[in-house]
Image 1 (tube, rainbow, N blue to C red):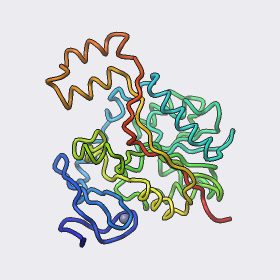
Image 2 (image 1 turned 30 degrees about the vertical axis):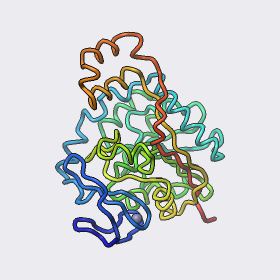
Image 3 (image 1 turned 135 degrees about the vertical axis):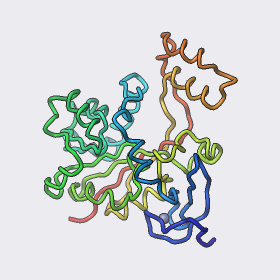
Image 4 (image 1 turned 90 degrees about the vertical axis):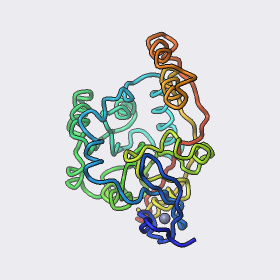
Amino acid sequence: MTSEAGASACRVCGAEKAAFRLEARGYQFFSCQGCGYVQIDPPPSALALHALYGEDYFDKGKYVVDRAERREQERRVSLLRKAGVKTPARLLDYGCATGAFLSHAKQEFDMWGAEVSAAALSKARDRLPDLSGRLLGLDELDALETGFFDGVLLWDVVEHLLHPVEDLRKAARLVRPGGVMAFSTPDIGAVTARLMGRRWAFMTPPEHVGFFDRRALFALMKDLGFEPVTSFSRGKWVNLGFLLYKISRILPELVSQETVGRVRRSAFGRLCLYVPTGDILYAVGVKQGA
Ligand SMILES: [Zn+2]
């Protein structure tokens, strides 16, 4: 299929052929016929992005540490272990937000963090005063020497980047040869994603502007000089309260806001459940070259 109107070259592999995939919240997405990356086109305006990542972006309550979140952090650590990352590797949490993973992993690893949002960075510094000298703005990364880290971690980051290859070159430079780049990101190749289409939980432009399946993520890694070594897809650990809230948004006639509020305030709201959607992709690549 030839490129359709509105689709520009793939921002991961450069291929020019793309097929219209879907429209969500007024934004169009196209699937690259070369690598499978699904990108927003045309890109959201700077104004739309600025309005999105305001002061309160990290204050939605989703960064509260609870059991569901702890399970997610444990899963990330086991991914690193599986890829051969050993204590006390020096790791950069790129897009560390308010420091949830840093706080979980700092006992085992020499953790550093980088974050684009100054508000989130300052919260992370308040939360982790012992790491404050290692929590940096993205510009400050340029001062670090090449190969400074044993690994760079991109937890739920790549789906936010308009130009993933260009944006991540800086981070890739900081990994030593033999070191790793680790990812978690929504899996556009998952059955759930295909079935739900524009109603898929992660289909939230302009917050998410590009989606990967395994093939596309591997293409990104190779562009950046990394060889993929491990990957898997999993569902999500959630609180019952959060799950009901999500259902109430999709099917308000089934679950009322009042019920959601009551459950969230009760002990049941904190029940931790596994939802086997299989739509979160985890992967690690190893940096090539001596
Ligand atoms: Zn592509």
